[in-house]
Amino acid sequence: MCGIVGYIGQRNAIPLVINGLKKLEYRGYDSAGISFVDNDLETFKTKGKVKDLEKILKSHKKSSPNVAIAHTRWATHGIPSDTNSHPHISNSGRLALIHNGIIENYSSLKKLLTNNGFTFKSETDSEVLVNLIEHLQTSLNLKIGKAVQVALSKVVGAYAICVIDKTRPFEMIVAKLGSPLAVGIGSDEFFVGSDASPFVEFTNRSVYLEDNEVAIINILKKSLKLFSINDGTELTPKVQELDYSLEQIEKGGYDYFMLKEIYEQPRAIHDTIRGRLIINEQKIKLSGIDENLEKFKNAERIIIVACGTSWHAGLVAEYIFEDLCRIPTEVEYASEFRYRNPVINKNDLIISISQSGETADTLAAVKMAKQKGAFIFGICNVVGSSIAREVHSGAFTHAGPEIGVASTKAFTTQIALLAIIGLRISQIKKSLNDKIFKNLLNSLNNITTLSKEVLKLDNIILKIAKKYHNAPNFLFLGRGYNFPTALEGALKLKEISYIHAEGYPAAEMKHGPIALVDKNMPVVVVATKKGFYEKVVSNIQEIKSREGKIIAIVTKGDTDVKKLSDDFIEIPECEELLVPILASIPLQLLAYHIALLRGCNVDQPRNLAKSVTVE
Ligand code: AGP
Image 1: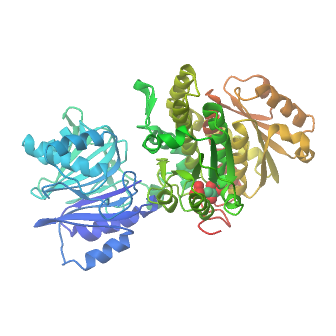
Image 2: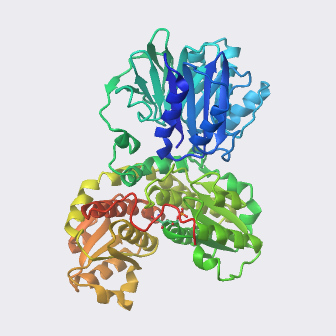
Image 3: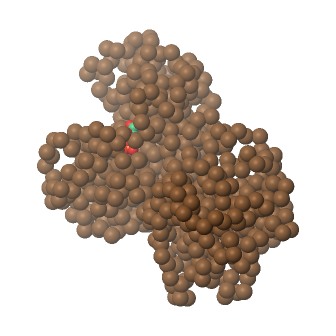
């Protein structure tokens, strides 16, 4: 996610906001910038790191302005570049704005502004917003605070913004919907941050804006006035005394980034679906596909290339694409595919999946396939990453930076996006009847709510973790869509707790692995109602008869499997192709708790890197 910092007060604002950006670097970013008012509005911004911004500032004449805003960008619209970096300046040069979030209706707003003579330098939605504010300010003769409130009442999407007007350098305007924003209140100064980390060393008094609120900070009056964006009514700000440490703030109050990212999954899935599922029109919008329709219409085979957790997401996609689109699909380890001299035909569609967009094996596989003439569609979480720039087209998961080495929200957002892609291709191929299409579309639209329900099971999962955290081995079993889920559960456990864990198709046990089962073997079985339920029940009975311990993921209200299980976790019912999203969350939490109980470092497990940029 982007980082927002602001300062208005009696001190030199520049070092304070630069220091504030450094406190937000943990959020992950690709560019940085600053604007301040020192007689005129000055702006410096660059692709790269905060230290690169500092170098640029050093070469600039010494300034000590009392008001400044600064930003670290995590690209969502437009690749990382100096031009796309924030702050964005309005056409007249009067306003500077920094933004964290996504303006969904920015295209229609951009058309309206263009018709009113506005021009744009960047590809970003944020530049549209700052010019909308200027347009309303001038056309309706509004002060900056009112202009921001009216502009945001016309915006659809999520935002945390900070705006300054060079003609009113004693004011700073902040507003929030969906993305976090905090104001720090000093004795004669105010701070702004995406969280409190930029200012917690200066003050512990803070106002956290709620959704649909805009605040006007006036340093002359030393006031913060709060208003509703919807109707402009004045509200009473709630000042709270923070007692977080800096480290706790970076982790959003969670003990580890991995736990924070597990709990971010409802928001991450929502952001990935947002703007792509048009529920009231029962349709899907995916520009990466819509701009390459022929490739998808003529696709006779899909080859998925990925590694690790992303490879598991690819296995789920194999079931989705063959089920919904009736296209033969193969899933390849990128590290094998790149060296195998594979046969790639004209109408093959290659899909690469990578959270980081920097995995060396996946990047090499993409380059090799491209050289062989294939069309490559990339699924990535990092805008501007090497793979995102290498592919012909693609779609981003909007999971936000994933800091924990163990992928969690990356996996569930990949599944959500792959389901959207599968539904879109089924429309192009006319391979799915309308009723099933609509049912799946609505189920997907509801998955965010269901994922919140699953997170409430955390304490139950902790109890199970306490029972089994000393087991030397684990087996994870599933069938159909839940076979990749079992693999993912095994990977989560082994990579952060160092317990040997293997995932298998449940029916495969009788071909050898069942020899491993005895009273010391916990076997996690994904045994939800949809997905060969009866067959999984008989697999469970085979394990029980060899004294294996059963930990079952079941559909809420299940009776049969619960009777056979030593422990069970009930998740809400959903369409089969979406079970991997709901079933993987308890497996992530199980691995997390077991690893902690074993004294492991869940965020940086031994021997592993977040992005494997080497062979
Ligand atoms: C999964 O938890 C690991 N972090 C690892 O397997 C990861 O999925 C793999 O290295 C692929 O990374 P990518 O998605 O960034 O390409």
